[in-house]
Length: 254
Image (cartoon, rainbow, N blue to C red; front, side, top):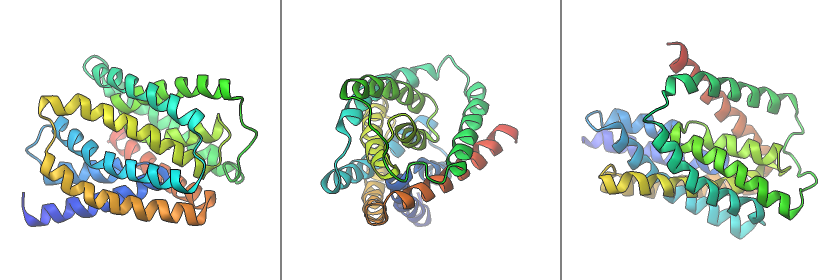
């Protein structure tokens, strides 16, 4: 790897950590950079290295949120546990379900999420009436299972889908939804590493170097999110969703 490629990866990891800490979608930045810098590596190695870097930034963001605000643990922990388990199933499903079938469906869902969020300016600005603790645990398991499977199988937009689900179904504001999503993202990243690492599909030195910059980005992103609140997270969420739509639209129709 050239020095220029290494710098590219470190800068990409910095921006990925920032975006991921606020609204999810860091893989949009980090995975393409890894593909450019490591053209000779297998896709599984690219994805495994990406997860190694991402788990440090996601974990740091989750800790910073937990220190400053009351995380909705009744939702986040059941969802994280289910996501960890079902992300393995998603990774295994790659072998028998073609992704080309899934991509248009995900694109359509992202467009609906985008339109719904933009059409309702008050959506996620403040928290609504919470569900009972028992219902939060039950539906947290369901949400974690679905989103964990998706993250293991396909991945793009998983963090954004998590935030939207926590706002829409669990009536959290965007800031608390983002904090809960970090806990779930940490679990899916850990599951992915448990899947990729034993088979040698992780470049440890590259991933750990990127992790340092991913953490720096996560510190900046979580600090801004905590300072500016749900309105800032909502704005970044809309931008990330728009970029995801453009990227998946290009991949689908090109």
